[in-house]
Amino acid sequence: MTISTVPRTEETDPFCLPPAEAAALLAGAPWRRFAVIGDSLSKGTGDPSPGYASLGWPDRVADVLRRIRPDLACLNVAEVGATTSRTLKTQLGRMTAFAPDLVHLPSGANDLFRPEPDFTVIEKALGAVHEAAAATGATLTVFTLGRAFVVPGFPDWDQRVRTVNAITRRLASDHGAVLVDMWDHPVNDRPDLVGPDGIHFSASGQAVLAAEIIRGLMVRV
Image (cartoon, rainbow, N blue to C red; front, side):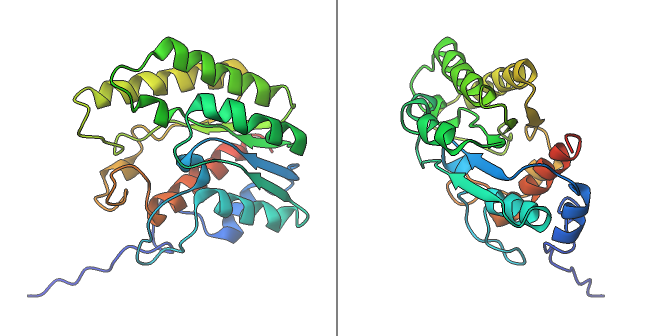
């Protein structure tokens, strides 16, 4: 007997949210100026996935917010390869000048690509980013790095990610940010979650990440 399997799509993915349902969860949301800073993970970089729209998570979140606030203004100054220190130097001024009321912050991923990361320095830099964003009065969002994010060249990579995620959790708590904890999300077990580089979520992961951010924002509406 032949057993047919139906490929998972955005419409059948249990972790995704249809746009209309997502907008219903955020009905009455106050945000009109959405800013994103950080690196390629903040930018929404990722490869296509069959059955999913090729959109990064920031565009997906913005599309949902525009269903509620058609006049939503967006600014995404995230840069591929940016470290937290680079974010401080090149992005904070533009973010502040934009006067956002919703800001997404980086998770320190590129700070880990060094022979021996100095987590004291990393925490200080990420803390400065959180403080500057919080000073705008905006609602803040941030996500932890998933365990599917693997770099074989560093034998201690798992511990590096765990450590920076712990920093992210502390800072989110200290600054009242909406924390989307992706470290042990079930989506990490999907073989197609990340692209060939082993770093960036594919379109299917971007769709799930957007849905989780929307669920996180729901409690602030």
